Picture (cartoon, one colour):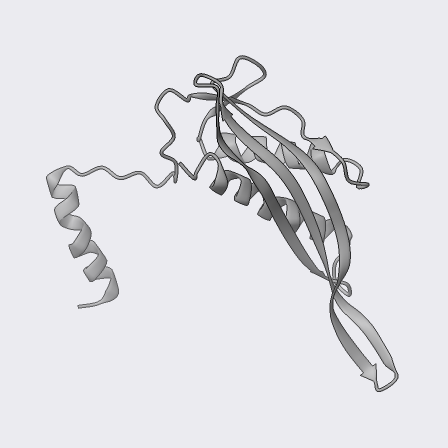
Length: 165
């Protein structure tokens, strides 16, 4: 039996029995329908990084259809503070025995985040989350590494908070 037919035959009984399974990755409490995402605070020296993280988090929650994002009076709230932003050498290469050059850099962004159920007045998730973005110095710039780090960071925030339930 081929791989496809094995998968189909294993799922067939579930469809015939009327089983329903969703792949949205969220099993939030049913009373949480809306979320507020105020602008994250920024304690790093990198300008606009908190804005970019907040915008990406909003976009991912909306496109993932996880919760409805509202400006105020949400059932839940996600708050965060960017605590660190670094751009450091990651891998080195040697052109000859006397010359070493940086080939890749890594952008690391650390955020303290809290996901709070406002209806029950309790924290669902509270912790530190880090995102990394490795970029090739010959082909990309720090902006590419920053975007990769933000994307990874937002995915980790979602996994630990909204999707983690």
